[in-house]
Length: 166
Image 1 (cartoon, rainbow, N blue to C red):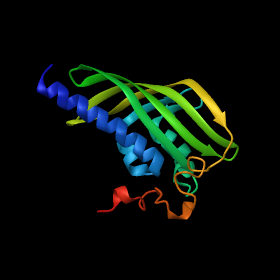
Image 2 (cartoon, helix red, strand yellow):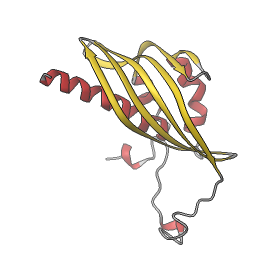
Image 3 (tube, rainbow, N blue to C red):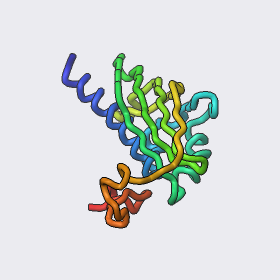
Image 4 (cartoon, rainbow, N blue to C red):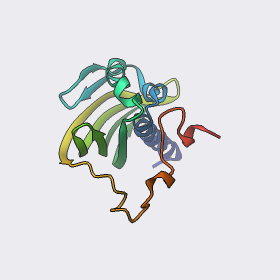
């Protein structure tokens, strides 16, 4: 494997990681930038079409101040072929919704392309693997972490999260 291959794989992995952070923080500009112009999103049977329209369809939910999600990326496999890459990764997602908490595992099977020197998603297929719905009981490790939860420093939505501040 060449140094160029390693750098390409790192750039693709960082794109995937930025995508997850953008979803969790409600950072729509960064989310859109992960896709190439004209990209396609097939989101596990609940959406299929232009990626730009997909982002538009979830924007309100992602940016809602009470929206809580955590997406964890794992098992990233990247097969390079010049300016194209076939990419598979697992995503474990926690989401707090009105009905309770939910834990989901999915896979993203992507085609990435390098256009004008930048790697981006050309076509994404999300495949659901499993889900577990839980009752909401936020006790912060049964009160062991912080009996007084007002002392906890919490994450926030874009642009208020500390990751966006110097």
